[in-house]
Every structure is written in C-alpha cells, then in structure tokens.
Image (cartoon, rainbow, N blue to C red; front, side, top):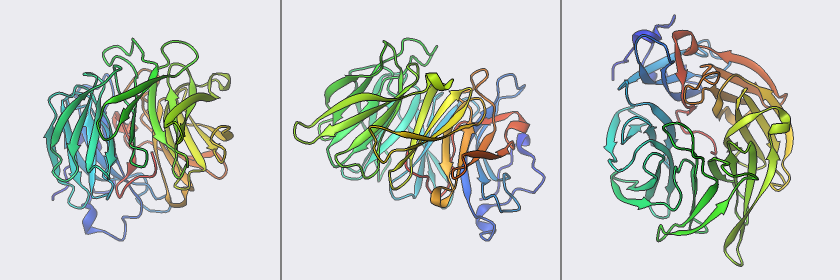
Length: 375
C-alpha cells in the first residue's frame, strides 16, 4: 500500500511505509486526528507515529491515512486478538475496522447509531458492543464478520463508556451528556445482563445531580471484580465493587479532583498487574497516577501537568513512560494538540510531541499500533 500523505503533514523526514523499514519500527503509536477550529480547510486522518524516545525518528509520522473530513474519527480499540483496530466516529453512523497488518480499512454501517463512541468486547459471546451517545442505544456486532446484529435500547440516555466482564456476565455503561451541547448530564452507571442484554439496574453516581459519568473500566485481576468510573461534572472517581453472594454492585466515591484544582476527569487506564490507575483530567490538563493496591483507597503517587485537554493515553513497555494526548473534542482551552511524554517513575513531563499541533491538527486518541494497554 502506498503511503498517503496529507498536505498538512509535510514532515522533514520522508514518510515511509511501515513494513519497508522494520528495523526502525520500535514503538509505533496510532491516533485519529482532525484539524483545529478556525483552520481554512477541514482535514482528518489516522496517523501512525514513532514514539520510542531513543529512535532518530521519534515524534515523526511514518504513515498517514486520510479520512473523510466529516467523519470526526474518535476512539480506537483493538480486538481481543490484536489483529484489528476499531475506529469510532462522532459524525457518521459507521464503524471503521482496520487490519493491523495491512492497514486496510473497511467501513461497517451502523445506521441506528448516532455519535459512535466506545467499543468493548466479549470473547465469551464473540461480540463487539458499541455505545451510541446520540441515539441512546448499544449496537451488538459479530467479532468474526464485524456485521451488526442488533440494537439494544438502554434505560438511561447518552451512553459513552462501556465495559464487559465475561466472568460475571455483566455489561456496564455510563450516561454522559447530550452531544449537541454537552448539557442534560446523566448521573448513573447502567448495568446489563451479558446473556440477555436486558437492563438489571441503574446506579446513582455523584454527590450532586448531573455527574456525567464518562468512562467505566474493570480493574485487571480484581477478585471479586471492581471497576472505576470517572464522573466528569462531579469532578470525582467512583469505585464499583461486585458482591458475588448477592450478585450486586455497590458504588462509592474514592477520589475528588476539585481540591486539586482539576476539573473534568475523563479517562482511567490501568497497568497489566492492576495495581496502578492512570486518570486524566482535561482542565487544565493533568495525568494522575494512583497506587490502587487497595482499590477502595487509591493513593496518589504523581499529579503531572500536561496540557489543555489531557484525555487518552498509551504506555511504553514496562510502563516506564505514558504518552498523554491533549485534546478533548476540540473544545476551547482544551485542544492543545500536543502529546505529553511522562516519566512514570519520577512523575515528570519529559517531552512534548508537537508534530500535529504545529500543522494546525489535534489528536483525538492515542494507542499502540500493536495493541494498547488496559483501558
């Protein structure tokens, strides 16, 4: 496949096809990007970038795949076997599926889905599950064929985050905000039965009404299962704990970002062991690193200033560095466009990748091409 080079992304080093130089492909990241507000021409694409700090092409885009300018490509998720990347879109009712080896992209129409947000997987059921924040439904599709099979109406509006646990047959979904104006915030975690896809319960999250839950993710290796959710407008992190005896979740607040001078907690990631949590806050932009050896009492290890709109992140092998993507849906003061490299041992920001920012572009997501870490 020939390298597709957008005129916005003229880089000093000639872009090369990934497969032609395997010796240089040390730590490749993949991200969707779009032009910032105010640019004369609207542009979108998928950028594959070298993230290895020791590489001579660190921060350079080595492959650029243009996308339709009205797609508003958003999140990127890998299939459980790491052979495919699923790319959601806020602007079109469709899912894009990219072959990790060939980088060929196919379009999967999902007409019932408006504002396509997050993807989760069940290896047990052989399905993928997509949240549709604009139409307040969940789409279920087949992992092998990637064809959607059914639309599930949800008890609460504006689903965004989603997590599936095969071991306890549960799906958890958040309830965030109305996409058109970010108003009418939800305030619950929606709990569904994995087998029947029927609602079991909605759990109130937040001290005040309208907490706007964003992401929910199970903690790796937690037994009984536990999950964190970020409450965007409440400015807090909540823990859900599973009781195997009565098969119910209980939820409580475990971290408050407001006294830290931070607002809009968005993402929560974990290391593979499950004893560290990494939480981003978009305003003014921070990465918070927690020791979660005791998930009910997370201990703050580092709070690192990044840049406006701190959002998604990925990690180097061994969790030595975090790469924080700084843009929250292109909102004012929260679309810096850079990627902050954080040393997770010292808790210091050590580099800023401004490759996209300098071209009037901003990344919407970031993960590793070969498959990201736990999110």
